[in-house]
Length: 86
Image (tube, rainbow, N blue to C red):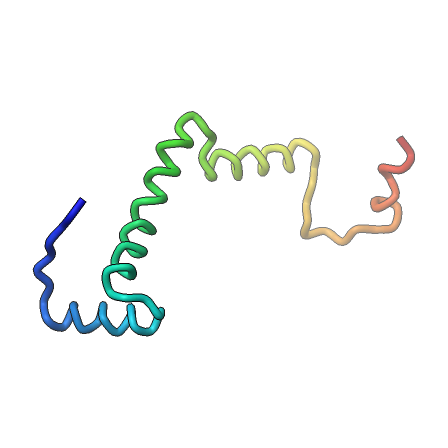
């Protein structure tokens, strides 16, 4: 696909400087930026039906509460070795 953009001179200068700093020609740099913006949307579309990060965090918190886990409490030698008894 070919797209024509009419950029303000200061925007063009900024993009040229960023492209130069990254060692890419402007066209390649713009393509890199656009693909980076488009990629997350494609990843989200592929993950339809997958639990969200918020769901995963909620489930981990519920698991911790259910099993009385708390990383803020100091662990004693007894707690560290409790799992070896079973």
